[in-house]
Length: 137
Image (cartoon, rainbow, N blue to C red; front, side, top):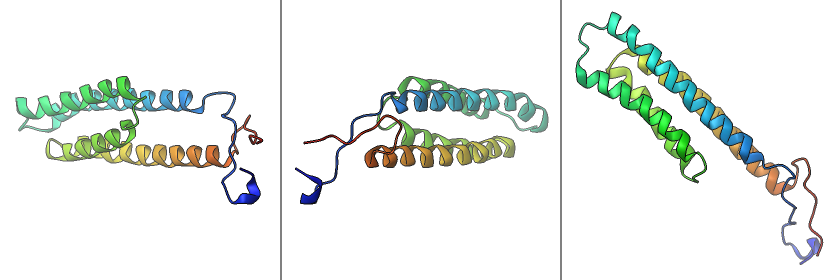
């Protein structure tokens, strides 16, 4: 089909895989979030007199989920799952407002990551990534 027939033009894939570095950003963000959550735990212990083993387990489970997320960054459902994880971290407000605040800050980071991912997909479809050329024929 030609462009004049109304079909969308096709483009060669970019020379470098843009998703490889993007997956690195996802993993790095998850690891950083895990570290911040774990570093918040001693502060929560000090400032929250009603800490129970259940609350501690919830925070440790959030940190473990961040770490486990690094193993699934290639899956198509990874980013939506990470956004759901953010809701769970924000719900940590019940444990301590500091945990909820960490969730809000990282929620903004994940919102920006979603924006970047959509932009890269759109630019790839339009053939505007470096190394992309129209496919003839």
